[in-house]
Image 1 (tube, helix red, strand yellow):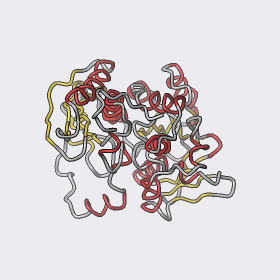
Image 2 (cartoon, rainbow, N blue to C red):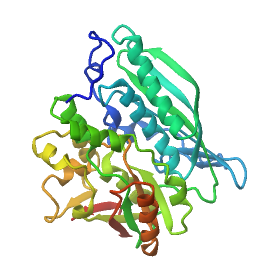
Image 3 (cartoon, rainbow, N blue to C red):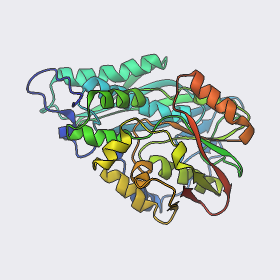
Length: 354
């Protein structure tokens, strides 16, 4: 099952035109850290509430005491072969960064790079339609954008949102004693690896699309809860990569109870069959020494927990007495897999998986 719905017989599979797909295309975190090391910090700008300092999901710029602009951009190469689904996934993923700050999107601009000699015009139109459909579901317009003729197909959005700076949530606000809650199941990268090798069945593809096209629009409702201290979303660095970023920013240590981590139904079976991404291995290498796997963790825990998630779930740090409210917000909005998976304690930044 490829998920392919070609518009004509000569159009190649989208995934065959790129060297990687989805958030697995992201530069490895260790490499990115080295590239950014000598760039100046953005601290002189008093109204820039969130910049690059803690690898947060979006930039936030204060307009006044009640309004701040949330700005982000996200784009990648195809993770699936169906052009409409590719557009939907990319747009959902881009808007997630606004929601992860507790904001609501206002509008978006399209980022389009297409190999015009390789793709039929209708295929490109279908990618754009997919992005438009997600933005319509989010109640916003794609108000413009920029396009180039590129070697590999690329699609995504620059998304602009609005947040009350008093309600804004960063990835660095976790507190000792907080509980960790994950909104979506893991396994997207593993499913995409199987898809590339024609080893993903119809049920697996359907589950993958359901996860990756589900808007994380519960972000503002979560941010409004007094007991929620930090938010981020799980994307290309995997659950553990983004959790380590939370730990670094908050100056805390985290624990993950592996048995409680929600997984897509076919994830374990596919991982056992060897459908593990190279990005998962790069993520693990980048955070080497920051994660300890205890004997009670599954043998496949590292491959799954570092698996790059495209349009993954929100990761929430909340007070113990707020867990019920957080899970209620998720479940009432249809995030049935949302679960408490661990917590934070004082200590050197890092994660223990047990």
